[in-house]
Length: 297
Image (cartoon, rainbow, N blue to C red; front, side):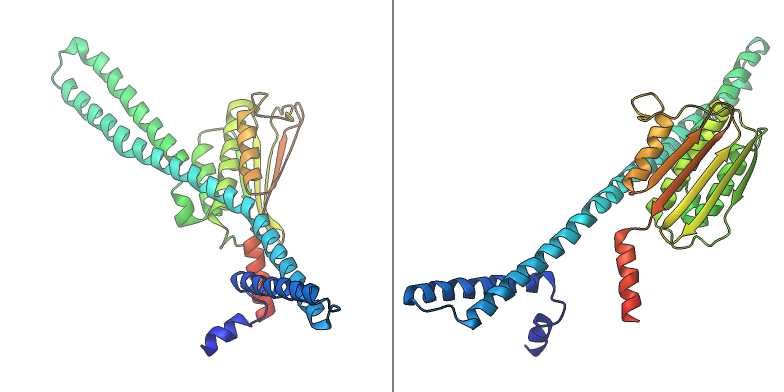
């Protein structure tokens, strides 16, 4: 009983306690006001204090509600990203486990058939086997793109390095990855978004930019995680509305960073290369917990 009363009168009060306290004060204020009006007495000081206290409680409840509403868009965006990544993981598993196994079985059957076919059909069977091998390799690549499994085990920096090494291995692009700080503790949705944006930028470089040099820089700043990508390719004209003007890769980048409340700046000109600057802010609840811990300590 004592513990319950102690928690009720603790400061600052919880949202539930504040709700009950506001209801109690408003009820007392209403009943007392009706009684004073009915008796025709002047307004006593005690009733005025109750009215002021009730208004203060209501104002505190309003503050709690505003803070909760401010957090909701961020939480919804994080949930949306989580759902999208879960769907990507599901598709990746289906490609790897189901379609990959079927292609492997077809390749084994082709090898078995090749050993039994007459010589005039050997060349056709070899072409079929090569096609199946290439298709299986493509399926595995798409599966890896949909679900970068190394993010959870290696972390963001090592995963980006592995992706750049594999993707640009047989190209003429000279690349460098700069990260002079530890990135431990980066939220998963932030790491996934940074990885996806870099992934899309590298794809655009290979398809369109014809760049010779690529720089990727990660920085842990007080306001958030900074990602900088620069190349010396052909450049392009960034659209104000990438989705409507057919720049689907840029639209995907913008969508990812917008869902995390971040900022994206793309600078590009013809024959001047492209620079992509992204800032992923720390989540409000993370900042709130950090400031609370700082006060407590």
